[in-house]
Amino acid sequence: MPKHKLPPWLQPKPKQRTVKIGVTWYAEDQWSLVKAAAADPERFEETYADWVAMAEESMTNMLTAGIVTDRVPIVASELLAWCLVHGKENNAAARAEYVSQSQFRAHERDA
Image (cartoon, rainbow, N blue to C red; front, side, top):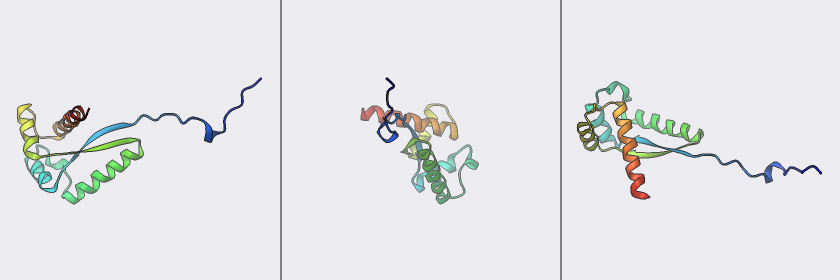
């Protein structure tokens, strides 16, 4: 005897894996300080408003792709001290690593 299939609206939904990543987030004064001290200032947008627009659009695009973002606020003095301690330039790779480590530490505290 053949099994009958459930109609689509009654079938269990496949679980989607949610990916959550940390995203660098600056207050305007901190953005200016990090940009001024950056080894790669050309990687920054011309203005803070342009940066906010780009960051928000990127986060929307990521959410559409199933990636949840977590804003990681950056304090310029803490980032620059971290770069010094770890022997890194203030560049895009170091900033990304700093955000990743900051998010990891925050997650450990919350667990």
